[in-house]
Length: 340
Image (tube, rainbow, N blue to C red; front, side, top):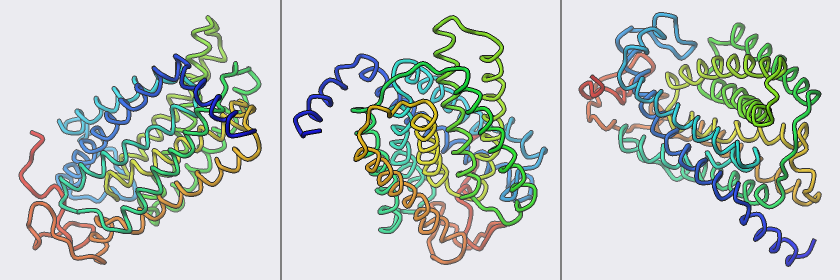
């Protein structure tokens, strides 16, 4: 394919009304996602302090109940609900492998918000990692917008997706039961990202079947699986908030989630069937760059280093002499309770 052919296809792609509507909706969802993550993280930190228990190895039932009484957590949940609505609306008019990666913009917004709230200014290494996350995803979405094609999802394809999801839930559940005392934020954000990738795919399938008037037992099974995966993913996200900063959580979700959704879209649904081999290579390179960025952020994020006593940074509250149950650095929420 020549450069002129790619240019013509790019112009044609962005004349697609579905893309012109779907992309802004996905970006709006990213904004709500970043705000929701910040407020939910604040609520989880508050619950940990009130309960006097660290939730890094898994939030208890009591801590989950306390979350329902925290105004900041409830506000964050409402914002995440708006993010989901925007994402579902985008999925209804645009290809899955275009909509999902655009959530990466939430990482930039969340990084700025968390730096402001916690007092942890991004370091050079963490900025490089964030750039890799966002850059890798946007390289991916550039080619996806050109070559992605919509296809009807067959019952056989849905059964394949559901079978894979069942295996994934079993494996993640076994890892959590056996190794949860060793697991930290990266495990939870990766696990949540994998599950949410399936959620996005199933949501796309349900939307298409409802639009076609095919709300049968297969569709109902998809809805049940979607709810189950969402519930487990939500638990993983809340636990990740207790062991990592919100922008690390968002980094994992906005990279792993679309990567899984895209792999399903490419390998099972055939949404990239029109892409030439060199574009598939570009997909792989872009995905590897984004994943490298997530791992790098997990290693070099200033808040992570501070809480592991590897970097001496004073929190935004300025109370350097207070300490959390996870380390010597004071908690980012040590200022007066702002979510009454």
